Amino acid sequence: QVQLKESGPGLVQPSQTLSLTCTVSGFSLTSYNVHWVRQPPGKGLEWMGRMRYNGDTSYNSALKSRLSISRDTSKNQVFLKMNSLQTDDTGTYYCTRFTTEAPHYFDYWGQGVMVTVSS
Amino acid sequence: DIVMTQSPFSLAVSEGEMVTINCKSSQSLLSSGNQKNYLAWYQQKPGQSPKLLIYYASTRQSGVPDRFIGSGSGTDFTLTISDVQAEDLADYYCLQHYSYPYTFGAGTKLELK
Image 1: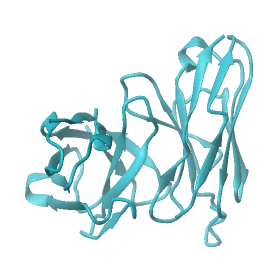
Image 2: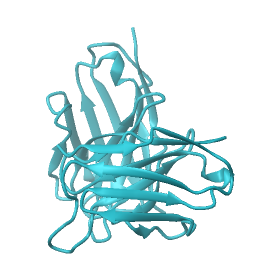
Image 3: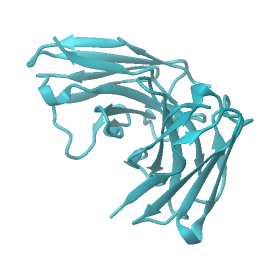
């Protein structure tokens, strides 16, 4: 069955780089798009960026200078790297699958990984 | 970037009531190619990942109760929940996927009165 699972450090120091991994199963990264969405504690959802099935990427303009999304199709993994972390980057980070054929929507989500930025 | 203005921020309701959540986009989400509005509604319960309720503004996802109704086109959209049940108490978000960057509304918290 389709699954996505985020992993990474729970605590990151300010100014450091966050590295997260989304490991997927039940589908191919060359057939579906995978997006990253984050949520500060008690706040709303923010779209961060996406890895397209063909390897193209798109980013939230507010994060673009700090954010990089890549993948390893042989390992079924999508990676998020974001540098110069600040305390307001604290939150839950989700990876989610977006359908490539109509109808279009986020159909599966990971459970999320909580990241705290603190010294 | 397309700005999604969602209202209200919170709603206090009793079971059995009907509620309406609004979402307005700063530009049209209607695709001229297929006449679909690229607007979805998600429900998020505490400690859980978001769950798709409605896509293309008005199509209910399989398994979603028919008390959830999406409507609207262009720039103005509405999620109506008729006969609210205790299990519907959650946060609700609209999402536009018409153009990058995708953007969510700020969310609406549905609480028990």
